[in-house]
Image (cartoon, rainbow over all chains, first blue to last red; front, side, top):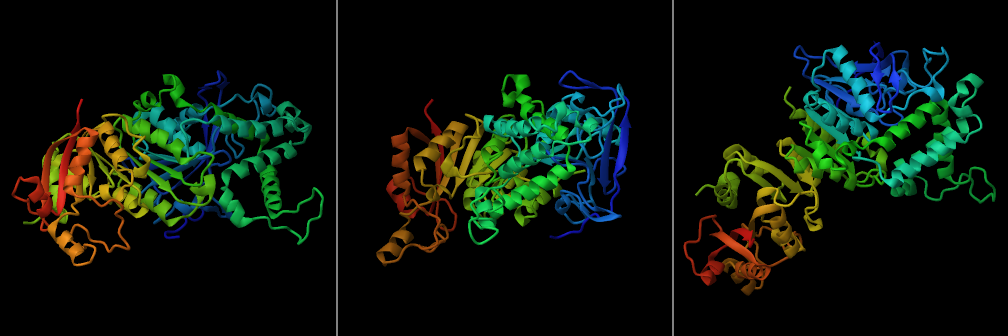
Length: 374
Length: 203
């Protein structure tokens, strides 16, 4: 991996006391966003890149904390001096979205009306709400227009939404492993995940904080299911095949196959730190995402509102958001004569490919960003 | 005669496009032709390319590049979105010959096609000598050639007739890239190493 890490970083907190009117009709009277920045904002404030996180991401995108050297940001491999998001050139901003469970206002925060955690009463948030909240953070940082807004998966959807809702504030949108809206199959997987949480006896209608418990079983199952959709069949085959933990069948329901062991481990790890209400909110934000709904499903008409230049990238083995879904976005941009480049990257890691450190993939992002004029 | 970027067909193509035109270059490589047309003729351009290294090089060149396989059609492009759709030295590498020509004239007002002419006299002589031709315009050995279709200028014109495509202009070049100065098709077929055509469809 060429380039270096950004090194030790600190997270910051921004408070907003202007009420935020949400797509669902709900109102957040006030809220906090935690965020991190890497690099230096130039005098013209023209070198800022917003990195949006996906379903389970957060504001700790790159670097590590001085007192936690092993706590490395989730997209560290692409950010730093000499890396594609070069902190010698760009000022990078990452934040935890509303409804999150990593410090920004979310279901586990105190509801000012009751003093108790919001729980299930936290209003439903949509991608457009996140984008409005991110725009207010940009205002606070003095950033009128982003050099680029970038993200993978649900993060890519935020970049797309930015280009439609704030066309004057986005000069480039980098949309990776995303889709213009979810398919029935995508929604189906999300609903099974939600059902796992909602039917957990420890869920308590979303007010489990008051019962000093958490729906760990449901959240674990939700993550196990989600995790399968992030990987490719080939990759699972290569990594686990039909390998057994012990050499012979045990004819029971314990952990036998390596893939079971892996998934259970991933499920347990995730359930240990993530909040179930946040998981529910994030999957609903995914399901509701469909900017073309404002134009009766005509994505071309929707993208006519954008003014940014676009880099769209997909991965050949991603069956969650296939290359064909990215090409729907590409077609809508081409039909509007927008500047757009599209790379279909051969990587074996399924949907998770967008997080991988691959020379060609990072080369494409690097080449695109190097041509951006500040 | 010196040629733009060492590619005589680029000069012919550049002369056929006008400032402000929308150009789609299929199999655009690293985007050299598009960059030249954008810089020198002020066109608006998009390229399609399958190869990873070329896609990366085109992005470096600041070209709008769409990674894709021409054999799968041009679904992401709307009808009549371009003034010119260019396929330079690529038709002989495409299996679905009729399909790609139809797609070109669906998405564009005009198709510009260049290809090596297998009936060029040096190629014929090479075959008569018992060897597959290797030349400036056919620079591959038989075992590493990307070419899958072997046809001549006359063959191509027959296909155009069969498909109802109108040849608006043709420019036939010898191996040095100089125009072949005769008009009789049989002679041109014999003397031309590289053919460049400008096609439209009856509307």
